[in-house]
Image (tube, rainbow, N blue to C red):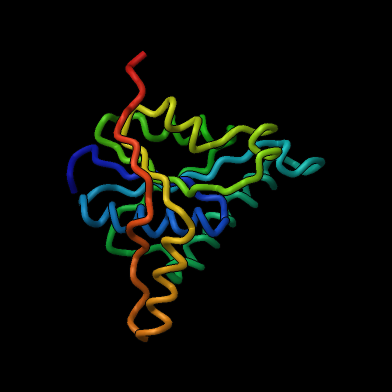
Length: 172
């Protein structure tokens, strides 16, 4: 494994985060890097529940994402999952702190009202990350699934259909 080389990926259980997870696993394997899947949660996510239960729900969401995408955690790469009590953008930028890191995100596709109220995680990460940021569309995963269904081949990793921002935020 390349020393200090990490691929950080945001996980939330959505289709776009599954596409990002596929891309991140592919990149970690290609770069011989550690995969750091991150799921962030806040107390506002599920009101009137103990914090320990909220963290447990977040951990189960992470496990479910890997189960849905790969049938479990892939054994051929080093994986260090992070479950963080934080806003998603801040958690992802903090996790992808090295200049050699790669941050992979799903595109989200929330409506204008949702973005106005909560902001865009991808936008926050592009503005604040000190590493390369790749935003993957859920269509990348859907295209892979469609090709697989037609050919009967094993599930390929989602590739392409991503927008890459090569401009890390200036060091502060």
